[in-house]
Length: 347
Image (cartoon, rainbow, N blue to C red; front, top):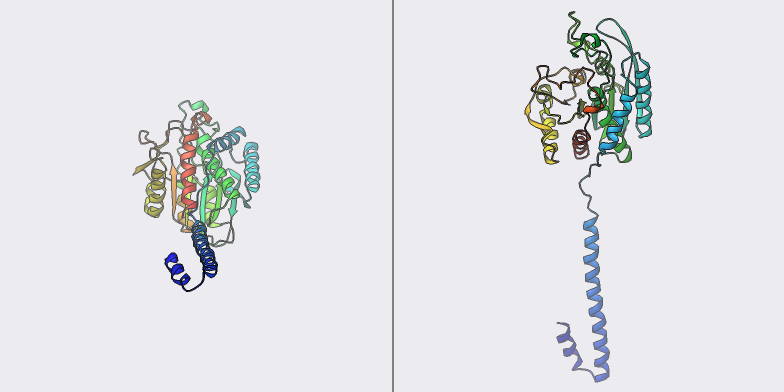
């Protein structure tokens, strides 16, 4: 097009003028091409600036494993014991180190047998100004009895609780660490409930009822750290570190938060963790989520290792002196931790 136009004009001028016109149109052509390229480049830049879907952090299973190990190193975390106090102080310090806003509920709770338990619910909050909140929780105390030991002489001795207590806390500590580095769009509250595992032992045949368990969450449900506390949903982690763990869809979770059960289990499947998160129903459990649901009307689920082969529904080492570090698997910690991160970072 440009050549035809140049030839048409040049026939009306002398050779000198014709050369000047040719130069002019050559410059004009280059300018046109340059502008076109610039617009294309700027369009590409604008396209690159479109925000991408939030990327969940990479859950570090080695770090989570060390958190389990650290808790166990204090000894059994039974209320009123030096190990319990030392571990609680450690958890508070870690949450502070990870940038959480701290709330510590100090309370005296009454056990099934009348024992007075000096207890603490330890709460770390992120993005506190955001009204849209997600609640993550686990219990940090350990069982004062090995009441499922086969040897009656050891049944009244406290256990390590590497899986039953420490594993859930360890996963949440690693999530807290990642949240401190880069928070999700929503607000996060992490609660370590106390005195969950001080319920009536199997060797005591008294009639105490079911509410002897989960004393810390019962207290919090009636006395939340923030008045009228609400959350979009809650996720409880309990016994989430064992080798070859199987997480079935707990019955109360399905009844009260089916949308969240499906989201978590489908996320785990998509991440390649389907062998842990089983697409089938499990039993109904007395656990901390029950009291959070009843007391605060927050839809919650319980991710908990369930063993269909045992009459009590749990692993062989449950409430025995075999609940030790030997049972803890980095692969299982990774499966649970990465799944939860994906859920909370991609709402």
